[in-house]
Amino acid sequence: MAEGWAPRLVALDIDGTLLKWVDGAGTTHEEIAPAVGDAVRRARDAGCHVVLASGRSPHGMVPVADLLELHLDDTDPLWIVASNGAVVFRYPPLEVVAEETFDAAPAVRAVLERHPAALVAVEERGVGYRVTKEFPTGELSGEMILTDVEDLVSGPVSRVIIRDPEATADDFLTLAGELGLHGTDYVVGWTAWLDLAPMGVSKASGVAYVAERLGVDQADVLAIGDGRNDIELLQWAGRGVAMGQAVQPVIDAADDVTAPVADDGAALELGRYF
Image 1 (spheres, rainbow, N blue to C red):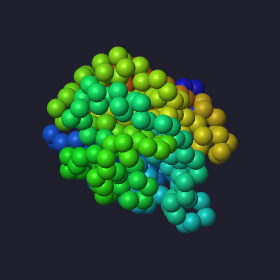
Image 2: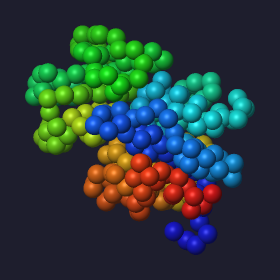
Image 3: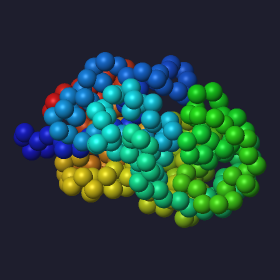
Image 4: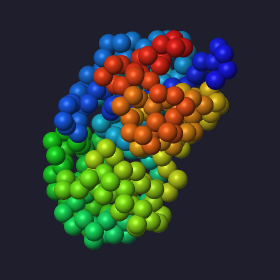
């Protein structure tokens, strides 16, 4: 980056970037370290746009926005990119600005043929998720509504989660590659967790949508994240920074690496500018 460069927009992942992982669990602590919260608010106070960008549903992102205490009033609500880019909304109040949907049924059937025991979930706006079976505690926000899989994907959806407690992330990476998943994009999480999204939709496309509306150039965007679903965003942003605990493909996609979330890496990176 040029000397004296400072971002005009900061796109922040939530789990593993703003929130620390619970040891040995697939969930994060619902609390933001003081150093991280202070750094994010300094960026905002300096006039930088702060955009949360997560694989979480809108319902699961609102509490984190509240923890950050970023929305000063209702006149300039936060921009938030949810569901890995498929939903863009403003808050408060929660107002969906853009949503991309697709027909997930063929991809879901193909995955279930190979992993018949897998759990499937589709977001139910403002409530939680419709699920074929209960997901492990803490992995989904909101209520879980038991639903037959055919009913689950009978209409257009913005995002589908497929989770197999008996498989590994590598199993799902291999599966996704073999299936080709035509007409959808996919991202494999830290465990045997597969996110299906409309083709061309990612956190990068969601943040690009917001940046365009705010009049911010791609070169002036800083993105910080730790997951495979951050790869496109880190590559797209003018400066993409991986958290220290990220897996190697995420680090390879980034321009730089900060400290792990346990050591408040996001605060260290933001502290370079604000």
